[in-house]
Image (cartoon, rainbow, N blue to C red; front, side, top):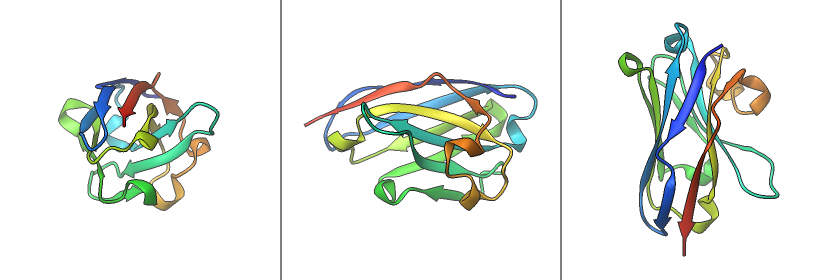
Length: 126
């Protein structure tokens, strides 16, 4: 497994930007698909974005397309989620996760991921 630690959450006004990071430890980080999920109170955890192990392919949930960007720095063992044009409905705990699934379109549910971070709170005020 890979150990994951998120950071960078916080409070931002609607329309603002925030970048959350996911620091990984473990030798297999570079070969893992990385994903971001989020969970709001009373809702199930939902897929946000995923990136291939090389960083060359990405996949996004429709509700963040054009606003969020997922990236990774293999040398730093870190994945990122840049969030722009934030909306109050983006308020949630954001989790990063690692998967052995190499097909991005198949890595969109939480059962596809075997390692999870503890989450970081993102709050968007209106």
